[in-house]
Length: 281
Image (tube, rainbow, N blue to C red; front, side):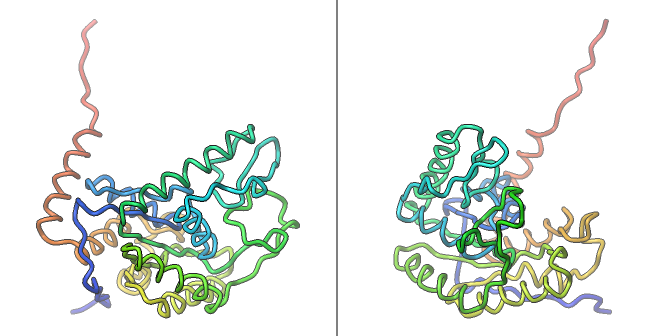
């Protein structure tokens, strides 16, 4: 008796191993996959700009890294005694303006250096909803009053018009790409708004000439059960993330690479195990 709908993944000829540099950009689901790849010995730089959700902010940060272009200081904003970057996660924020700018530029440099190694780029889109401040799409609102922003949903064309030339450039420079859509549910947008957002992302990726990995479909169509979600019923559970990750390895690596990854994983588990030493008074 078949009680699931198996999702078939396709490597489209891409194969990675432990000698393959990797760069992952995007949503918190990219962090989930990136942490597992790092644990298993892969050479990965994950979310150097912090967690990014919308396609336009991911593209803008990637373009800065490609050009090795420092952040325009005009993109810094001060709020509640902290300086923030409109293009970076709040982990870069600081009470000192120069320190915030320096952290942001260091991240751009790290991403640029990884891109110089011609990595496999893994891009995870999280949402098609964007916030605009004075007409500009921002990556993070930094808890600034919502009255300062307008919120809109990107169209398929808006995403494709930015990403198709960008992926063409990446491929011309020898940087291969894999796109995926985060299975994290954004129910603050309402269930219907979340579906519209994810559908927009899926249709946009379908029009961009690049391989696609079915993380969204594996969780929402194959696993399809609340026991594979966390307590918030929006984020995948650790078990679900493990299953999607194993499918990623099955799709893009050879059995020999997976065996080597398992050895790295066992070593990481041993290193993380704390031995209890008994002491006598």
